[in-house]
Length: 291
Image 1 (cartoon, rainbow, N blue to C red):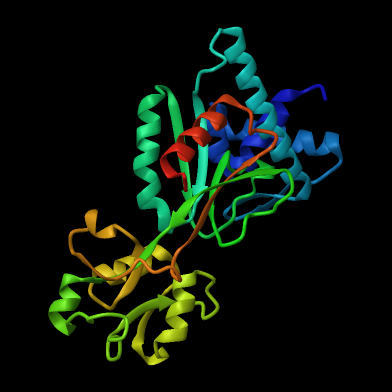
Image 2: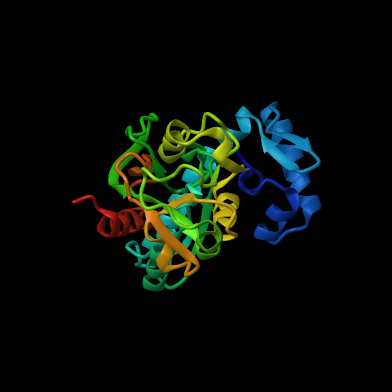
């Protein structure tokens, strides 16, 4: 391939999702971005993106370009470090993904890690979506589940358990009282999930132990559910220890074995040995180890 600028441009469009954002990151005009994409698609005789009102979504060919582009970007970064004699340095951008539920536990650790490495830029993607490491969507994933993730070409290491407890706001307790234990839940109001088949173990427990009529508020994501609990709508599940960060919360019960799950550190084999991935992996294992 003769024109690496076009590949670099397409890689950033695939990663950022829009022409304008890619242009901003690259420091070029958006018309140049579009010209690079058109020229590359013509040269490859393949459609790399689906264009739509919200931006550019990579096709299967575009996903392959994203994967190769990510690995290439990391290799160039390593080469630059070697040339300047700082091959063990940690810098540039580091992308980490996890469930939103564990963000309160992870964010303070990321702040500590960033303080240790001047010049490091962190991007933290929290949500239910499973970001594809093989396509360069993230460098490191912290995933939850009873079973070890088994995607091919990923390096998986066990971290710790994510413990969950049942909480109420002080406003809820003032209005409805607090249950004396898990045998005293009748008549209490709960915050649940809109998906009756939600995979989170605490929601599965809720469905098995609480009448549907008691679940008076159903949220589409963890942040909304947390806001509902804090607002006093009902009892709800949050990461154990949430009361230390949110003073208006009171722990009602937990943590219970049936509510928690294991956390796994996942990296892709193409990037696993890079300096920054090794550094964050070692740091998280030290802070979150099950041992």
